[in-house]
Image: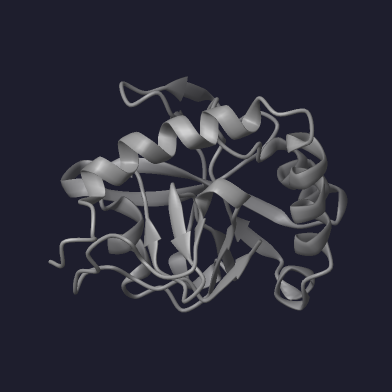
Length: 184
């Protein structure tokens, strides 16, 4: 690791604060709306019928507008449920889907129809840092890298200004999975 690289753990701590501070800005909503608009006109989004996405937590880009728009566009939305051994499955989000807050602070479905990975055409991936060459730093659990390892659909991230780096300033590891596309 070169001297100018920070550890992912160090980066996560800094990025959580940077993202929190950014979301307090007056123009944060306008910038988020611009990202949403670019997503809604993206050919991969337009051609996807089943999309995986998280239910955002405070301090993250709000995913509720994306979910609402996708439903309005007749798309199926699936949200993640964590499983043992740092695995996850995506469950169809229906009006009667029961949700619970986990020990990690995420909101997950407790039941519902699991969507086969092959049926997810797009996965909108969360994270704390993204480089323009499509590397990502998540929250440290490795759930998404494991899921993406054999994911055949399109992986995409919506990236707010404080999350964007020209190149990784963190160590890139062999298990890190590149995003197919980032919108910033």
